[in-house]
Image (cartoon, rainbow over all chains, first blue to last red; front, top):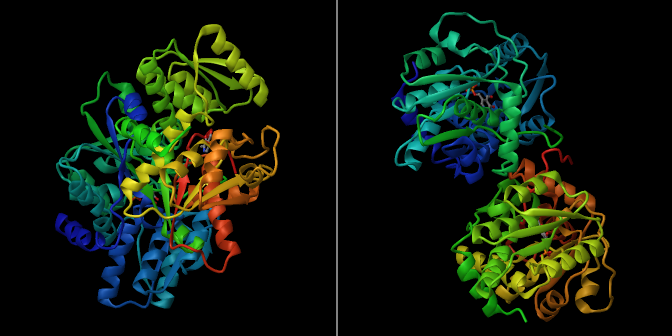
Length: 310
Length: 310
Ligand SMILES: Cc1ncc(COP(=O)(O)O)c(C=O)c1O
Ligand SMILES: Cc1ncc(COP(=O)(O)O)c(C=O)c1O
């Protein structure tokens, strides 16, 4: 079971190895949204996303136990993060990548010296390619979002916010498999969390258990959160958390938020990183006034091909 | 005559009103270039470029003297900066804008409440439209790069670097009319300055006086530095400076630098801001080792349409 103590232990190690990412602001965006927006800049994290947190923590766990090498499957950010962390830890690394993954992400994974193995672009093919190779070669699988170690590693972001701010306001988080959201929920049990999802994800129903959804790749430009299913451990943590809210955003709302981040904050983030701001803007447009004066928006990643256009 | 004392006076006022812009780094870019690169982030300055410095200083000068309003011509950044500074100072503002200027820049100028007057996209039409309106309405013209007040205002960037760093390494600067370069030359007379120009500008010949060039709009993607001619006062300052070097970069070199800044530094800058890095990379590729361990690269602006592609 992932725990707050586990997150603290992960954080104590992670913070010695990774960037303490800055918090950026834009008075223009504050004016538009109607509250002070603190952009936690994980796109400036090592490897360009918060995924470096979980990756570094997993490397610590497997090297302490002894390992023949690690393997993972990822459309990109997790793959980069694991490849980088494995090299830093002197551990061999294999990344299973679906056809169609962005070229910039693949180039980065290879740049970190990992072996790339391609598979079909379906969740089933990714998982099976990865687990059969792991078994054949005796490799440790590093899960992008569902495992206890990954959840506890991502949670270090919450503890870092606590160290940076005298009090932590509500946080807006993009949710894929739920590793980041559940890690932060463990780290900051008293902080309101706004989980922002693309359409058709049914996050509320997944968390309250009213519907068992099928795994599929959601048709969103936010390629970091195309995974639909929130894992069992992630669901348990989110279901037990107080202060959880879900906001669903459309593709147009994601694009509009991305324009603001590129042109006003001048940060070159990937589409997934625009999802939390899209959620905040939606909330702000639906209510006459927001229930808080300040909010944290997590810019979760910055890995986007230069050829990407809005 | 623009002087170091004038720059100091300008800086003392400017620093109370503008952002002290951060210095960003990327270990990947350091590795590629072969030295530590300090990115002075003026794209995070008010209005998205260093032009806010000269604009704020000019407003101080005209309001002390008494003014009926200001007017300027600009393809964008200077226009935005003057519009913003004028509104902040409670002064009316007119901006003459050539046909074809990027939509994002025009929208920003109007957003700051300035009146926009269009003209043909030739240097001659811009200058004459501006000066005849200035005369007819009794407005003060704010020159984007050639005037003493503008030069002294831009120079505050040099003094800010001196306050941020224990010692200031060589600086790479994009040159249009030469306001920024000459201001920094006054502020930091002992610092090596690498002036980076697009092709066909003939900056060396302009500074050493060996050739009188025609004004024209240079055919470069770096739209902030299409102005070819360096002004007389700017030329005088640069000619008298020791430690001035000129590097010419191609369009492909500018694009390659821009890809690095977008994908590695994750900063959404405009093409002109990639010119200094292009110059540093060129220098590094031409010599077995660089004559310095550290360099400053000025990210001079961040105003680029979302539709812009590389
Ligand atoms: C940039 C980015 N943001 C958010 C997420 C979602 O994280 P999680 O799967 O932990 O919910 C991912 C996952 O890949 C990502 O790459
Ligand atoms: C972003 C940017 N960089 C550089 C310059 C060049 O400045 P200067 O004309 O002072 O040489 C400009 C001028 O508009 C600019 O907008």
